[in-house]
Amino acid sequence: MDGRGCQLENVADRTADACNLGGFLEKQAYVYIMASSFKKLYIWVTTQIEIRIAQHKRASSPNSHTARYKIDRLVYLERFTSISAAIVREKQLKGWLRVRKLELIVSTNPDWSDLSADWEKPLEAFSEDTHRKALESILMGKQESGVI
Image 1 (cartoon, rainbow, N blue to C red):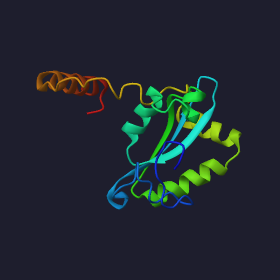
Image 2: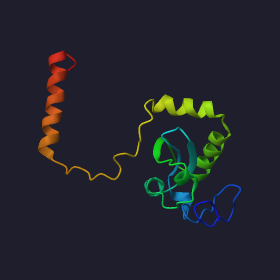
Image 3: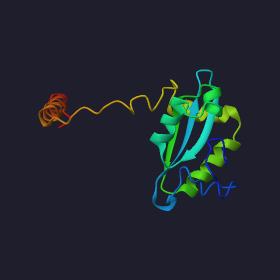
């Protein structure tokens, strides 16, 4: 069992993580970094990014590392086409010194914004008129500036 209560068949490389990786060969995989307000970091890999981030935010496992340290903000995310590539990258990031991890986060997310803040909000319904007007406005601005 791992810290999330998931049965692992191969702990060394987690290629058979029964919680996240069923049918892992055809799924996209993600390496992500979560942070607390005090910049405590957590690095992991998953194929179900939305579910995993929601679990962290809800502190589904109260005794988990992320729940104990209130690590609930997604501050860095990479997507991969294979779980094996994601695991290699995860291990690489975990091997870095803390300062290098901080530099990586700041290079893509200087404000340490929660990249998943809007994930659970409902999407606005598509309105062709609204999008047409926005496109016309953009095109008019480019014509006036001489771009087109």
